[in-house]
Image (cartoon, rainbow, N blue to C red; front, top):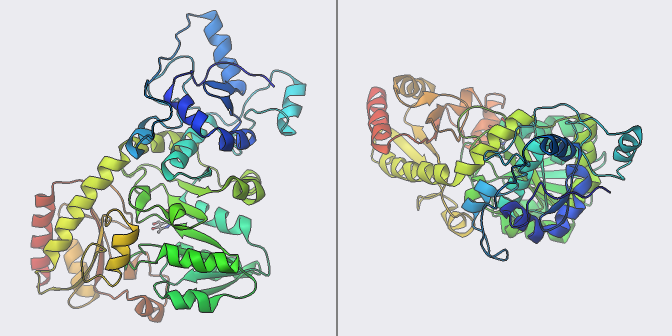
Length: 463
Ligand SMILES: Cc1ncc(COP(=O)(O)O)c(C=O)c1O
C-alpha cells in the first residue's frame, strides 16, 4: 500500500479529527479511498499522486496547520462545520477543492485491478466515491457524531437508499402516518411492490408503535417534527421499543436540522437528511445524507449506492460543504425569527391555530423541550375559512414567496393541501390534520420586522 505524507498535515485540524476517529476511518478506507493510517498521514489515491507529480515539478507550497489546539480537545459543532473533513491538497487551497471528475486514472493495469479488488485504497469512479463528496460526508459525519455517512443526490435518494438497501421481501415496516408525501410513497406504494409490507400509525402515540410490531418488523420510520403539522415523535421511547423487537429506527431529521436534534444519541440507528434544505439553505443544490454505523454501510448501503447510482454530484457536494460552514448561524437566526412570528400570529382572529414546537399549547411541547435544543424555523398555522382564504393570503404576501421548499434564506410559504400533500386523498389529509386553511411558513433570514409587516398586511387581506 502506498503511504504518502500529506494530504492531511500533521497538526492539521483534519488530521487531528482523523486521529480521534482513527478506527472508524480505517474501516471506511475502501469506500472513501482515503485511508487514514494515523495522525497526519493518509494513504492516498490517484488524486494525491497527481498532486505529488505536479508539486515536484513546481514550487512546493505546503499547507499550514489550521489550528494548534490540543488534539484531545472537544471541538464544538461550529468548528467542525468550518474545518471538519477537509482534505487539503499540497496546493494549500483555503476553500475545499472541487474534484469535478467522473473517473480516475491508474498508474498501471495492476493498480486498476488492485483497486477493483479493494486491495488498494483509491478512487475508481465517482458513482462509488469522489474526494469532494468524501469531504462533505466526513463533515456531516463529524457534526452528527455518527460512525459513517454516505451522501446521495437528493433527500429522497437518501430515504430510498437507506430503506430499500436494508429491507427485503417478507419484511415489515412500521411508519408514522405524518410523513412527507414522497416518503409516504416509498413506504406505502414502492416497498409493498417488492414484498415489504408497511403499517402506518399515529407516530405521536407510543402504544401504537408497540401494537404495530409483527415478528417480521425490521424498521421503524418517522420524521420529527413532521411535515407540515409539526407533530413530534418521542425518539427515545420509540427507539426503546425498537430495541426490544430488533427493528432498526430510521429518522428523517430534516425539519429539526442537525443543529437542533441528535437522533443517534436518543437511540436511533439511521438518520436521514435532505441536504437540499437547511444544509444548502440558499436554494441552489439538491442533496441528501444517510448517517449510520459502519456496519450498515458495509452490509447494505455501500453496495446499493455503488450499483444503483443515487450518488451525489461533486459540484453539489462542494456547494453543500460551503453551506455547512454557515449552518449554525443561519439556523439560529431563522429560529429566532420563527419564534417571533409564532408568538405574533396568535393575536389574529383570522388565525385559528398556530403550530410551533416552542409554544406551550403544542400537543408535544414537553417532548420538544426534552429532545430538541431549538424549536425549528417552520411555523404552521390555520386560517379561518379554507382554500380560498389561504390562497388570498398567499397571493397578498410581498416579501415571503410562494414555494414548496423550506430551510431557505428566503422566507417561503406553502399551501400543503394543494402542493406537497396534494397526492393524499382528502380523508388521509383530514386524518393528519391538514386542512384547506393550513399554511406552512419556512422562516428565512430577512429582518423579522419586515416579515411581521408582510404577514400583517397579507392577513388583513383575508379578514
Ligand atoms: C421531511 C422531508 N424529507 C425528505 C424530503 C426530500 O428531500 P429532497 O427534495 O432533497 O429529495 C423532503 C423534501 O421536502 C422533506 O420535507
